Amino acid sequence: MTNFLNDNDPVHDKSSVWRGIILVFVIVIAIGALVFSRLDFSMANFVFVSKIIEPLEVVIESGDNIGGDIQILPPKQIKPKLPELVGEMLDPNQFTANSIIIKDQKTGAVLYHKNEYQSRPIASITKLMSALVLLEKNLNWSATTTVIGADLLGTHMYAGDVYTLEDLWLAALVGSSNKAILSLANALDWPVEAFVERMNQKALELGMTETYFTDPTGLDDTNISSASDVAILLNEALSWEEISRVLLIPEHNLYAKERGKNHHIWNTDWLLLGWIPHNFVDFRGGKTGYIPAAGYNFTMQVGNEAGNIINVVVLGVNSHEGRFTEARDMANWVFANYVWY
Image (cartoon, rainbow, N blue to C red; front, side, top):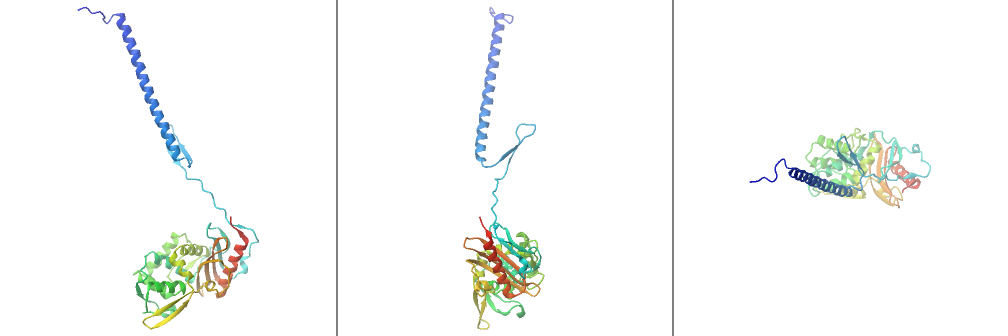
């Protein structure tokens, strides 16, 4: 058979060259199409991702290689405008309180102060922390328990009397009963040491760095805190409806079945009772404390007509009535001499 095209035939050589050129051209087109499709997909992804993270600032950390991690920074926060003093600063030394702080409840700004970080005994203001620890246990308010504690701890009730936990709660926060708060803590089946340990843990969790508790009542002068820390404690306590509601109750009657007697308890907060006159349009509650080593202590939260709320703490005042009048006068000065935005 005749071989019309052999390996040495010039026509055969030319055909091979053209076939090679066409093959290379096809490969180049295929590679180009593949690269273009990947580029288009990447751009689509970039647009999609950029839409998702559009509100955030994006920083791309690139190295020698293509790519890198994407670091997404948090949104920029606008700082709140703080209340501004527009009058003359009031001399805190005209008051007998050893430690003072008044804070704006919304921004935390300190509006008035004196020795606010000085550690001092806080007496029955301690019961606010005891109440917070009790609320962690989801109390059954209708359950009953027996009162414990020596009679010298208070006159509202006697050891051996049986009350509901709700009655004891009211006696502890309305009348500042020492035996009531001890009996409530005892109802949890906790040793007192464990209860106090939790009080100190809670203080640290709240950022109360100048505070240390040794008993749930505040009778020990080793229950210490600062005006700054007490303001934190008050703010936290009043955020609980179970506490804020009771601190606004003017009076309560206890009935002891064992003795067949009623006992009337007045709230220890004389501003609430109106026995110390004031013109606060929004009185949100307060707590007193007194032992000889502490002097007369008081903390309260009040608001004005514009809805501005302040936390007030006075520690170591030299008279029972003075703690209320000094706290009232300081709060009135703040509302009159600060502007809120």
